[in-house]
Image (cartoon, rainbow, N blue to C red; front, side, top):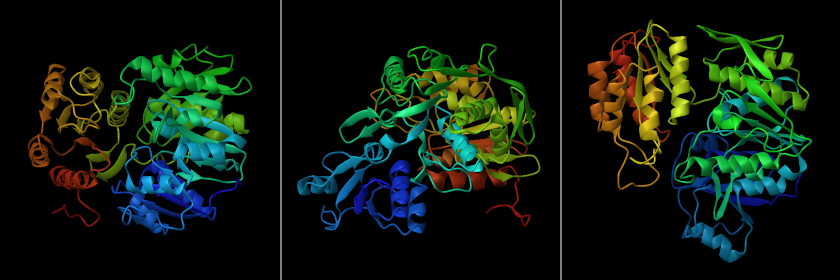
Amino acid sequence: MPDLPERIHFLGIHGRMVGGLALALKELGVKVSGTDPVGFPPMPGILERAGIKVTPHGQNGRLPSHVNAVVTGSMVNRGEPLLESALKRGLPVWNAAAFLQHHFLRATDNLVVAGTKGKTSTTAMLLWILLAAGKPPSFLLGGGIRGREQRVSLSRSKVFVLEGDEYPCGLGDPLPKFLRYHPRHLGLTTLQQDHLEVYPTPDAYRQAFVHLVHQVPGNGSITINTDDPGVATLAGLTPTPITSVGFAKGADIRIEEFHETASGITFRLGTVPFALSLPGKMNARNAALATVMAQHAGVTPKKAAQALRTFPGVEGRLDLVAQGMRSRIYTDEAYHPLALRATLDALRSRHPSRRIVLLFEPRYTGGARGPWIQALPGSVAASANLVIASPPVELHSYARPFSTTGFCRRLRTLGVQAVAAPSLPAMEASIRRWCQPGDVVVISFSMIRQDETAHLTRVLREVLEIRDEHGTLPT
C-alpha cells in the first residue's frame, strides 16, 4: 500500500468522489475530517453513519492544527479560507483525481469507463461482475449500486475499476478527471456534448475524449458502443486494439435476440444468453460493454451473464418510489437529451399501454443559445405523453435564459401535452389537474431538491390513488 498522509482534511467532502475517497481512506486507517457548506445528498448521511466529522465552515478560517494534507473537490476555488490556510502552512494540497493518480493509479491495471451517459451503470456492472467472480478490485463509482453505499474502495488488488468523469479536476487543474486515470482498458458508452459551461462546442467536448483515447497503450484495449455516432468517430485514432459492441450489424460483438419483458430484458452475446432486471436497450449495451471489459480481468462472458442476473441497478436510474395496481412513480437523475430519451424509451418499453408523464426540471441547458432548447423536445416527445416542466437550474446566469414556456410550446407542436409550471405550487396544481390513475410518472429533478421530489411524490400518490401497505392514501 502507498505511503499515505496520516491526517487528511477534505474540502467539499459532500461531493460523491471526495466523500467516497474520504470513506475509503478512513478504512485504510487515515484520520479524516471535512468541510462543506452544502449538504449535497446522499453523502451527508453516509459520512455521518461512518463517524466522519463534517463542519459547514472552518473555525476562523483555519484548518485543524493536526492536519498534514488537504484534498479538494472540483468546486473548491482560491479564496476559500481553509484552502488559503493550508497553502500558508505549506501543506500538500491535492484535488481528488490527482491524489488517486499519485498514490494509487500508477501501480495498477486500470479499467476505465467513460462517456456522456451510461458510464455509471456500465462501471457498476463491470464491478458487479468482478465481485461475483471472486476478483474484487479497487474501484471508483460516481453513483451507488442499489443496496450498497460504497462508492470508492482502495484495496491491494492490482486491478482498479474507475468511472471516467470528463469534468475538470478543479483548483487550477483544467484536466478532465479521466486524463489522470491511466487507462489500460477503456470502455466508451456515448458521446454527445455535455457540461456546456466547460465545453462550449461539440468539438471541444470531443477533444477531451480524443486525448483519453490516446492515453491507452498498445497492449491495452478500447471497447466502444458502435451504435453511438459520437463514439464511432473515436475508432481508429490509435493503434490500440478496438472491440465494437452493439446492435449494429457491423459490430464485432453483436447484441442479438433482444426482448423486453415485464421484469426486465433478455438478449444474447454470441452463444451466451443474458437476462437483466433492468429495462431498455441502453442497459443491454451497458451490460455488453461491461462483459467485454471483464474479459480483460479474466472473467468469461458466461460468468458475466450469471453475475448480471442479480445486478440491482444504480441509484438515481428509474428508482421505483411508489406503485399501485396500475400506476407507477419513478425518480431519475436524467437531464441530458440523450439520457432522457433512453429513460423514457425504457419506460415506454416496460409500460407500452400506459400514459407516460414526465415532471421535469431542465438543468445546465446553456440558456436560450444552448443546444438543449433544440434537442430536448425531440428526446422527450419520442415516448412521453404529458410533460409538466419547472423553470431551469443553471450553473451560470444567461442574458437569454432557457425558456420553459418555449420548450413546452415546442412539445405541443410535436403532439405532447405540455405545461410550464413557474413554481412548486403551480406544479402541484398541474398534477392535480392533468394526472390521473393509471399514469406512469417519472420525476426528474435536481438531486438537491429531495424535499420537493418527496412532496410531489406524495401529491402524485394521492392523485394516482396509490395507497400504502396499510391501504391508506398520503395526507
